[in-house]
Image (cartoon, rainbow, N blue to C red; front, side, top):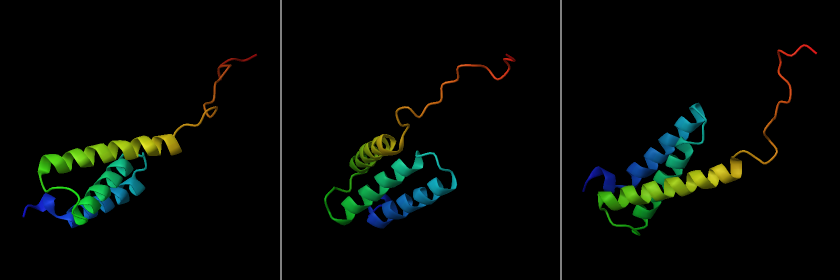
Length: 92
């Protein structure tokens, strides 16, 4: 059995990416972390095959969906952008 077919490898990878997200917060690694965790859970439950292309596809799709959901929930809110109407160098 290859290493990518082991459920615990995906879970450990997801946790590692989550820890890296804590060190460098940017909401980029958190989507990958969620994708790896979901992939690991699906493998552990026996819901997906052990083919590498299938696992990468599941990881990519769940990471993208997680990133889009995080962006929707924690992203820029309407009216949150500050619009400057005068320059700091104007002396009036």
